[in-house]
Length: 566
Image 1 (cartoon, helix red, strand yellow):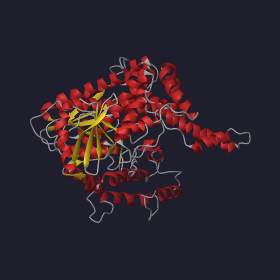
Image 2 (cartoon, helix red, strand yellow):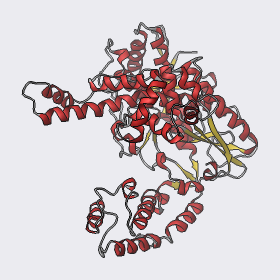
Image 3 (spheres, helix red, strand yellow):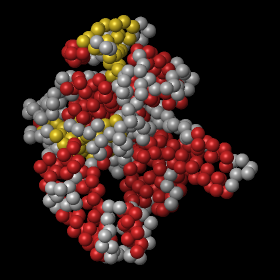
Image 4 (tube, helix red, strand yellow):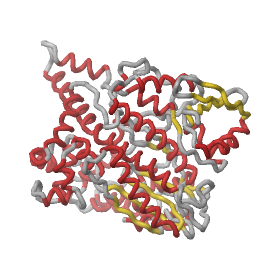
């Protein structure tokens, strides 16, 4: 079997080139456009390693013909990793321009991912030769002299490419979605749909209450600026409309304000307009972007799949005769930190139980809430509140874990790069950042220049502090899903589902959210699918951390609808 089969588009169709590890290559097929799916169908039983510029560009057509690909190399995604990795600094590939121009979809990062977001790595047109790019990537990895680094980096590239296959399959299969249930939930929460597109009844009632309570008869509560002014005129010392700030305010109008904000978010993000745009034929099909965040986390280019609110999860209903297997990893990032730092005491605290409860039982903190906020302060750089007060206790109890993130933060403050366990590397700050730091160190620097430089250094330090943990957690999740998709394909049920082939009879992934997956499975193999989910999590832990005794326990539920899982 060839080491790689490289697919390239030509004016007449597709060229497939056999690329061997010894440097030899030969064109094995010249295919017309219509011949490509059947060629892959015939070739796939031998489990070739396909290489192409972008899975987003090649795989959807194969899926539409009912063809599942076992493995591939996504050259665009792998090229992004290798061009930025410190491990390849000695190679021509490092910091080289990307082989293909990237698309720039509508940005839709999660709220805490705004700093981390990357453009979509999918190419818009062929600008480089795929065989040349593959050779450059293979040569860059082969030239690394440290064998453990090579092994980790190869695992990352394989996991990233497997993730690209998962993302395309998630969109193809779709998340089962009952539009009628969604309609009912919206009506129960918001009132009937306004046929003219105006605010639904319940929201209009709340608007009236807010206007009366704040003595602001023309107030538009959807305008943050107008709402802040109205609150201030009512004697409320509010500087923003953030819910956490408003919850601290005692005023008769505040319950209506908070309820309106909650319903307005639902109406805007997942109301009737969203339902019309995104749910078709009983499926929600978001467009996931693997590697869409610089840490390796996924993003989406539409549909808000990474922010599905609990109010509408009841609309996610399994097909008749099928079940949803819902699993999420408990305290994933703190456990990743324990494994990264090889902090055995911290790993032991979470062995066989909730990690935060383990911190309390160990006497490090006095409550689960303090354990949680203290750990968040360690990983995200919190400097105020309960988290900052608890952090010194965590540092004394788990010095290796806390030192690891502190060192990553210090590196960021110096303008240096940091890397995840498998080798994804953080970007450098902008030239403007470095210029500001240099200016602040000059003899004539003003106090304001020095203050701003310190502030920006701390901000970048918080970014690198979290990068190593969030990025390694993303690597664990990729390995989890890659292992799981291979295990699930071996299970076949008796009752066909409504997903298009090749997922009409076997369990398959239908949703992913950082540390959570949903599998759609025939009822008769749902227990086996749940076992596969757990086994895949254990396998991911071994891939990343070997025999270091850190556990990644899951909460797994077999349910008929998503809202029943929690």
